[in-house]
Image (cartoon, rainbow, N blue to C red):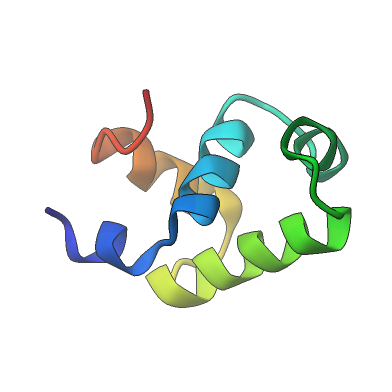
Amino acid sequence: MPIRKILLSKAELKVLELVANGYTSEKISGALGIAKTTVQTHRRNMLRKTKFTNTQQLVAWAVRERLMK
């Protein structure tokens, strides 16, 4: 299992999947029933944990590693 995947929580992985599918933070908020600020926090934490500098890198990595369905 990739080390970076281990660092991400289940909630972060779900947010990442929705980001990769083109959802905005607002749409993710509605889909998951969480605050938009919580979505933004998950996104920020994923970047910090994986040491990527932007969402595009994060999504590209997730696709390469087959972290999403």
